Image (cartoon, rainbow, N blue to C red):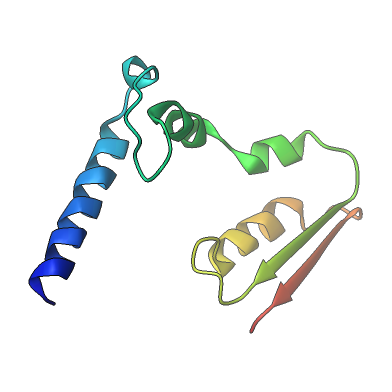
Length: 96
């Protein structure tokens, strides 16, 4: 890895550390971390899509791309585990 890549990696690691250390006291800050204000990161930290979906009674279609590196097959299986017995939930995995 060249010096430029190492410097960029250091910047990313520093920003990740800042995101992890955020508290509600930081929510009014104008500093952008990965292009988003601290308030956005704090909301994401408490976001639980499984809990939200649990409250829904309408049919659900859960799709997963097998090569997705942000939302993985592990996440897909978590959804299947939680909602697999519901007759109004359909799952489709696209492996490639």
